Image (tube, rainbow, N blue to C red; front, side, top):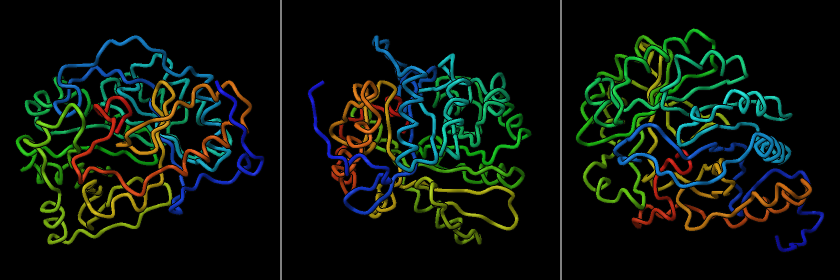
Length: 335
């Protein structure tokens, strides 16, 4: 690696803040880009088998420790499908033990929930997010390529008994598959203290045709909720981009993630690192920077490098110009 002199002032413990005044206390860390589902909007042909080396447990520890020293308090472990890592439980416990990390979250397709969620909770997992694109078994199988909805829902029931800080379900809005399913999802959160978020489909390099066929604005659904007396909740400092709603007759909440909304990026508070150590300043950036070589350098150099990189973050993504950047699919970084 070429020598890159960094000033002492650039290497202090100042929180990561970009040139637009946004602070980044939330790290989304992918631990693999492999997935065992074949979701129509992500990997309809399944995962590729390109040989590569994912970040090791020791590299993850060093990486998250550095981010924590720069003010990161929340880490979300993502994939691909993170439960394909045989050491996922060790990753959770290692990240949770790092000073400064207050919250460890996991995003999963739920395939191994029944087998492993108790171990994850015991290892220190605080928050759980599971992808559930339909509550109809046939539609779920069509969208994901896996006929596993009953097992996933049973895993969620088990998770519900384990005292997680929050359980969330993510549903990608698809015009032909779940556009009319609002009532089904409302019935679920009437009885369960879970949060279900509808995510507008986002364009990727390999999914342009599918995007044109299936993209559905969440605006009409959100207006329906407002007319039914749902009220929006105030976000916490490390919350993601969702607008979440509550209703006195429902135990759970419903939310919306709408990346095509004009001010979507104004409150950005998260950075992403891929399973091979690429820093994603934005999910839809044109280029990504390799931080892995810096893991062999003194921590202060990595801190300074991260602070310099964050200054290059743009004000917004360019999805409005039909430009998904270098993101081929969401398995490469976990959305």
